[in-house]
Image (tube, rainbow, N blue to C red):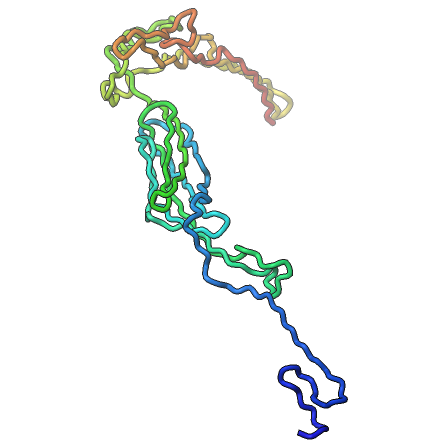
Length: 308
C-alpha cells in the first residue's frame, strides 16, 4: 500500500501515515434494551391473592325460597404470582356454593419494559408494566331454612392447602305465611260491635308440619254494606234556549256506618294453647276481630250546569 493511500487500522480506525493527524473514531453504542423474557411465575405468593368482595349480606328472604346468585372473584396479586384454587367449601345448610372447574389457576405474569415503549430506559426498566392475568369466579346463594339471621364462612383452599382465604355470608330468613286453622263458622259471631266482628273462638294455631290445608282459602266475608245515594235537581229556564240546572248529590244519604275490614291477625299463647292474646276490645282497638276500616260518612255534592 503506497504512502498516499489511506489505510485504516482495523483496531483503531486511524490512518497509518506518520505525520498525518490521527483520527480516532470511536463509536460507542449504549442501549438499555428491555428484553421480553419468560413470565416470572411464583408459587410462593399466595398470601397476596384477594377475594372481591370479602363478604356479602343477602338481606331478608322468606324461608324456603332461594336468592339470586352472588358472584365472588378471586384475583391475583399486583406482582408476579401463580396460585391454584384447590377447593371452595362451606358447611352451612342455609347457603350454597357453586365453584365449577376446580382446581383452577389464578395468576399474573409480569414483564419489564421501558416507560413509553422506548429502547433506552434513563431511569431503569419498570417491572410488571406488561402482563397477563387470570382470575376465578364462584357463585353463592342463600336458601333460608329457619327464621332469623344466619351467617356462614366459606373456606377457599389455595395451593393444595398451603394457605386459605375466607369470605363471610349473612342473610335473614323470614317466616312464611301460614293459614290459621278454622274449627267452626267464624261468621256466626258477627255483630254491630266494632270490636267483635267474628267468632274469635273458631280459630286455632297451625301445628308443626302444617301446609295450611286444614282450612279453606275463602271462609270469611267482609262486613256488609248498607248504602243509599240520592240526587235532587232543579232546572231553570232562561232566555231563548238557555237553561240553568242545580243538583245536589248525597252519598250515603242516611249516614250509615260502613265497616270495610277487620284485623285478621291472631296471636296465640302457644302452639298447644289456642288462647288468643290480642282480642279486640274498647282498650285494644286494633285487636283480632276488631274493625280496622270505615267507609266515608254522608257526603254532599253541589253541581251547577248551564246549557245553551
